[in-house]
View 1 (spheres, helix red, strand yellow):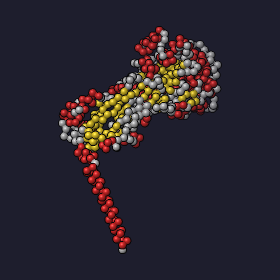
View 2 (tube, rainbow, N blue to C red):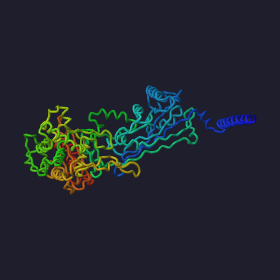
View 3 (tube, one colour):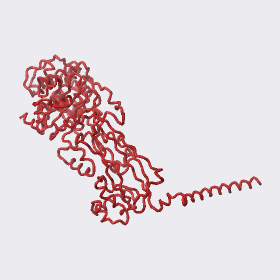
View 4 (cartoon, rainbow, N blue to C red):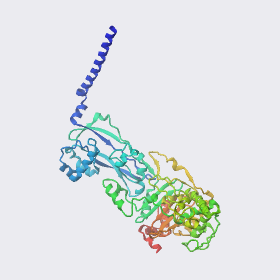
Amino acid sequence: MKYLEGRKYVIQAIFLAIGAVYLIKLFYIQVLDDSYKTAAESNALRRVVQYPFRGLIYDRHGKLLVENTPVYDLMVVPKEAKAIDTLKFCQLVGITLQEYREKITAAKKYSYVKPSPFLQRLNNIEFAAIQDNLVDFPGFYINARTVRSYPHKSLSHGLGYIGEISPRQLEDTAYHGYRQGDYLGISGLEREYEKYLMGKRGVKYTMVNVRGIEKGSFKNGAYDTLSEAGQNLMSTIDLKLQEYAEKLMEGKTGSIVAIEPKTGEILSLVSAPYYDPSLLTGKELGNNYMKLLRDPVKPLFNRPLMATYPPGSIFKLAQALIALQEGTLTPETGYPCNWSLVRCSHRHPYPANLGIAIEQSCNPYFYQVFRSVVSRGRSSNVYKDTKLGLDAWNKHIKSFGFATKLGIDLPNEKRGLMPNSQFYDKIYGATGWKFPTIYSVSIGQGETGVTPLQMANFAAILANRGYYYTPHIVRSVGENGKQVPEYSVKQYTSVDPRHFPAVVEGMQKVVETGTARFARLSHIGVILCGKTGTVQNPHGKDHSVFIAFAPKDDPKIALAVYVENAGSGAIAAAPMASLLVEKYLTDTIKTAYRKRWEHDMITGSFYKWGD
């Protein structure tokens, strides 16, 4: 009985103790801790997002390509934005009453109690004009952030731009962690390296009174978190070469891609027409984007990665290498320039060997080279024989990176097109085609499509005599960052390296005595190896193409130049490529006649050369 009596007192003691704890806590909240009193008097605890500095982007020499500029967002909490003088507010921020109603309605739709952007990307002058007057408008406050700015006007397609996250993206689980009003990379490097550049948001809690005036941090910042800046990128771009390449392509349509063969690093990436990257930043981003989008010359279109063209005569080099590998051609093989097979663009003597055929860019010669691979008697059935031959050829051609995504670290890369037997079966039926149907592929016409990036990569393969590194535009991420591992792996073609010297010798002849004599660099003691191409265009003047690398031994640069509607490869693309190589290797254009060429390329006077 005494035991039960004792338990009763224990239970009573426990209840008394719990009650005492609550009383002490209540006394602390009401008397000792003034934060709750302050909160009650101030009427609001404001959660302010601290946006991080986005990572910077540099060129290969440490020159700044992309930096940050401060801007200010005018935020609104609809629940707090009551009983204000809306007319006076509209005059202060420079909007109409109708615009105010639309924006406040949108804010309420997002959340009645959470802050959302009311006016975005205010500059320093706009911010200063309204800052001191916001005390008269409860529910409105300023949140600082940064936008991109550029100390130059180049590389718009490579750098890309940032913009506000869309409602559709907010619903996508891939964008978990983003919120309305956040910025993210939309295109280019900004999109591809978003997870490194974005940084990490911080949060600051402040107390504000009923007029929206800050009264200090909550709990002395005990619950605040600091933002973390994004990581910087060291790109592979040579800004000086990039600016020069864009200068040469000003007012034209086409592409220039330059690669360092030893590494796969992209030195220059030009898509013309181009635009000033500063147009897609700041307050006018939306308006400027729509103007660029509606522009008939399509300046937003990233031609080096997304445009596909017939390769033209540069494709003859690949045909020769495949035939050498297949054993149907030797460097000493001669074929007549037989116009009954296919017309030739040049009047020349009998191509007695491969080097001369490349120098003279003989169409009938490479018609017969392609036929030797595709129709080599693998089967007694002419249709089956052509199918087997074309599919064997297709495997080789894809090993050069054609009809595949090379894997560049930029979005929206296209594959291009190289036909196989299934492709033609769908068009003509299983027995509806044979070699005469597809012969135009032999000279880089017909059902072929390559991107300028693939052309430049092909030039790098020739420079390396049989292999390439995945083309890329970022060298490293973060301080003391290392190269992405996959960019240091050699990608070999299916053609043995021993077959490349004969083709390279032919490319040297093209520049020294052949179709690209304008491109010689003997005045600076450099051997340039190249190949011209003239791509037929049913809609107008032919397109001018040239691929090259230099020096011949220990190459430092490989490039592709593609100028639409400029005529033969020797007229525009070859001289431009020659100037770019000279500029890159020597940092200047040395002679008077070369400077005259430079003037003609920049002004477009070269168009008269073909008349």
